[in-house]
Amino acid sequence: MHPTEKAVVPTRVIGLISGTSVDGIDAALVEISGTELDLKVELLAGATYPYPAELRERILAIGAGVAISMAELAEIDDAIAQVFAQAAQNIQIGHQPATLIGSHGQTVYHRPPKEGAGEQGSRVREMLTTHGLNPSYSLTALGTPLGYSLQLGRGALIAHLTNIATVSNFRVADIAIGGHGAPLVPRIDAYLLSHPQEGRCIQNIGGIGNVAYIPPRHGDWLSKIRAWDTGPGNSLLDLAVEHLSAGAKTYDQDGNWAASGIPCHPLVEQWLNQDYFHLPPPKSTGRELFGVTYLHQCLKDAQAYQLNPAEILATLTELTAASIFHSYRTFLPEMPQRVLLCGGGSRNLYLKQRLQLWLESIPVWTTDEVGLSADFKEAIAFAVLAYWRHLGIPGNLPTATGAPQEVLLGEIHQRQS
Image (cartoon, rainbow, N blue to C red):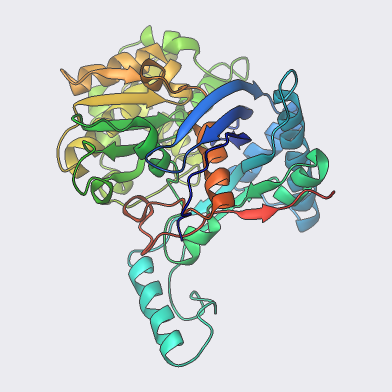
């Protein structure tokens, strides 16, 4: 149930996330007040804390499918929780302490549900309840093809190390009822970035790209919001840079390397035939698809065109921009009047330029230009989700995740004293 009283007194919350690119932990210290339409967020501090090099390599290896033992998994889970807790402590230095943490953790595996999981899950739960059975029985065992998503960095340990109540495991409740558990940010986008007259696309470009289409804020606007993962964001670019530089670089600063090349458009058209780009929303993806194996296939495809490294990067950058445009043109009810970029890819000037060319007269801004940090928007979002969980406000948006209903997101781990 939604709370009956507004949260008038600002609550100080920390949001923590490390995305698909595994660049480091984004931490945001914010003051939040209000609930939904009156939601207000003030960013007090934001910083990115790099992973220790060895831990980053181990996380990337897991994401690439390297087999590890349960003992190793537990060790890495603890190590991630420890660096997340340290990030939470560091971001508070010089500020009044927070009373709540929202930690997304580090995604190491994501399996989308099969088509119909949400509807099928609802029917199964209804059947179980009708017959007096517990609707929490495993839906997978009953033939429902639920998704699965694993985020490491357990909230209980973060709460213990920081002595701050911590909300984590945000995706599992949505997945349990047949949703994708992603994207989870569109509900926050709706309340912080909507406009009374202007339809907007909020385009996050992390390792994976995801969009939230927010129609003008009038009438039954919330039910018309659409969101999904558009495909690769920075994931292929970062992997390619590391490969092409023999490990000397991990990303393309401002897109300068790619900008020195010319994209191969026939190759982009070939890559856009990949099944994921034509799958209707709701949909989600990750490194399981757009990862090392996919990059190696792209590099193999590029050999036929004898592309040099700059041309390969330019073509991969073009794939990100073209896949975003393809998503809009194919799946949106109408094209937006403005696009607002956020995430690490919003700083890639060449990528932004290429996306603007695809979108022609539609302005491409960053969320910074409308008052919300593009660098720390995702961390801010998980602070808000933790705040909503504390107030008993649902955090998912069924039109975005494909879940049949709204649910509370996240597991609460209380401080120890």
